[in-house]
Length: 181
Image: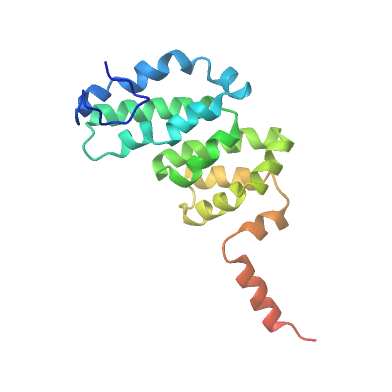
């Protein structure tokens, strides 16, 4: 029997992606109800290394995947993302997730950061806030993604948010050029 923890193409299944349609739920269903406890206990990194190693994400993005497979993979990924409070596990997905998945990742940060001082600090030092600012510049005004970015920004002093905003250093240099002695 095929195990989804191994690479997608194994000698036994070739490129039979229809077999994978049941894997997201078969693999993760027993874990989904336990995700908050697993994440708090610190066991999230192995789960998310599995997820962010693109098993679910790769299946979802694979052009050969059926619509059923894409739907099930997205639903499983979305469910796990919504339940995880271990933000360090979510950070790699800020880089790798497509926009329609990214909004769930950013939303989870927007829900957790206001209530966790240590997580806010770690988010800045790890580069997460900078990445969110980059995401925010490309998000459409009025979109849910933009709303979540603004919620994250409200957790930080304005100076910190500005500092990590793309092109802020260029703006400072322009001010310097215009400064009168």
